[in-house]
Image 1 (tube, rainbow, N blue to C red):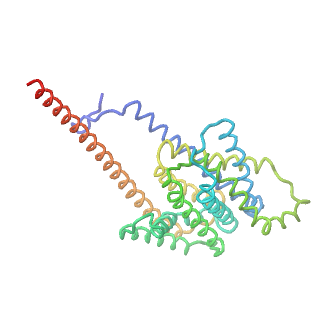
Image 2: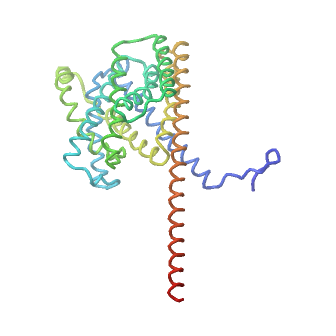
Image 3: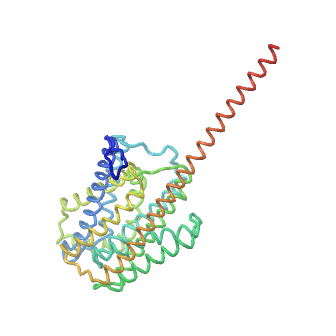
Length: 359
């Protein structure tokens, strides 16, 4: 039975819709937990004032080693998902390899930024991701230039610039590292569309790690040998590898990829983007209240401007997506109508032919 509001009867939510809403919020909660925990855990390990293990390349390599092993077991042993059947050696070298290299660079630089910047400020800088993705998409002709969209991108940039101006512990090198990570990650996302999606190859997070994690591990070995290995070699006598810390950290990082697979697979990438905005505010609040990072009023004002522009961007993106889906359905319906009309016309012509033959 529906409830009456202002004399108008409104249908009650069906059990199926309620179940879908509960499941959606469950998927969002799982993703928020893993994403939030990975960021805080990485900050804890890398920060010199906390666990004091400032080796971002080594930490990324540990994650990639763990992910390579687990994804191999899930794909080849338990066959949770099947690898794309179209993957060949030439396709791997031309498409997957560059994506893997960009992923490795993005992880390396983003982990490095935690050594120099606060968690809250890093989240504020991440608001620039739509700006960078759109700009690279336009440059690579994957997206079309639109004046209103560019105004929105400029608004996000101004908000982040104000937040950066108000940052109490601003570190130029840390900002360069984080911006570099965003550029590599944005390029990777665009190249996934150009190199893989256009060829009909869809990689979920598990199969992505299955192909990309070993590539990242091999690539990261090169800078690791020159940057971190000499320092670690000197510390071997005074450093004991903590399997509990690094094991749980790697497991949570892998769990994040599964949570992404669950959230995007059961809802949409847009849902994850919106949930990401909630995660950013939670991290800023946690960074200020628990880690005791300094968050200034100028910080919050600038990020609020960027936040509003990002929300508006996601709203426009959602409306465009709905319009495209509606147009696609309309084309399908018109095509079905044409087929039905053609079928009726064919039947009518057949009947006329039969009548002519009988006469």
